[in-house]
Image 1 (spheres, helix red, strand yellow):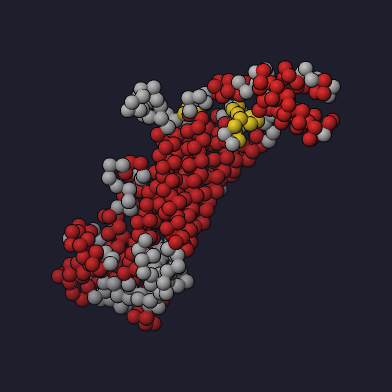
Image 2 (cartoon, rainbow, N blue to C red):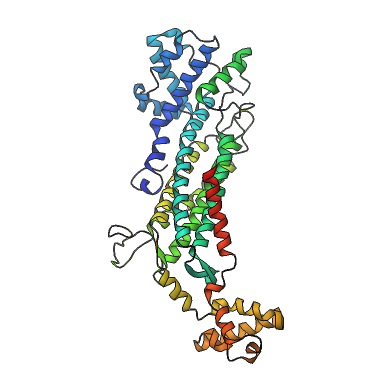
Length: 451
């Protein structure tokens, strides 16, 4: 769980509140109140039963130390909670207390409470994704033409623009958002099956009670209970892991651009941020580090959910229980990663001059593909590739611009003029479809806003 002195790294205050102990208890009590209301509306509880239970929606009446102590023996917190709730309601209105938990089982209460908490958590993620999207759109527009070296295998390649790199992140995050939206529609469903998922104790009234319960809780009613079919929750956690993976890719790239020997971009700077306890000169990428730490933890949570899928028969032994902290923790981590990423994107410092200087320091070697491609029509692809490989090696050894070496080679100059060579080795002229790609992503942003 994300608590203790290091909790700042692994959650946000808002998401921590959604999955706090207090919020969980409130969700459990909300289920019991809604069930009483559904039973009352279908004639299975005395009039006023739900009104009595509404007095106990605040968990302050509970003896929490006893609750925790007894939960360890009972195997879940619902059993002792029901004991305390029933005693409290009975003291005021014994007939009303008979509506408590009627037709339900502990898993119904726990699963539905979790779904209610998820229903509060998802809008927080949606809002955070929108804020990050807006920040990245602004940076993409601002740096659509900002040149820097493309890098493959951590080695310099042909040029790209920072706007293109950020557009790639934007597109990935929008796919993450769309997948989460679709999965959310599937996940926000009631759990109400009784002992083995048949609702037998409610007889013919079961369908009506279930419909009312779902309506009251603003959840969809699934086609049948899902005590040991956990695919909806599993899917959500996998998608949260995908989301943090997209954010980690963004963080990794920014951290690499922040290295002093590169120094092309950086997180926000301040005297209090990113310092070292021993090296006064340092500016550490703390937000990037937080996102990378978060994503390092997420695959284990996703794997736990996958591992817990083959649950036994109608009610699980141990595998269901493994979800209890896993799902909330995945939401906390995703929220924290989004907050850090939004901070990076909003306050990103970019040094276009350093980007261009790093490009120029490559002496045109990273544009060898452009010349090779131009020559291929005349001498063939393989010959052109070999010629440029040898020319690049000579330029690198002599520390000369590749253009100077190429202009001395008859095999090149008989096909390309000096001005053509210079143009081919100008990074501004070797960006391919960069602007089309950026425009497509930004157009999607416009289209989404229109919808």
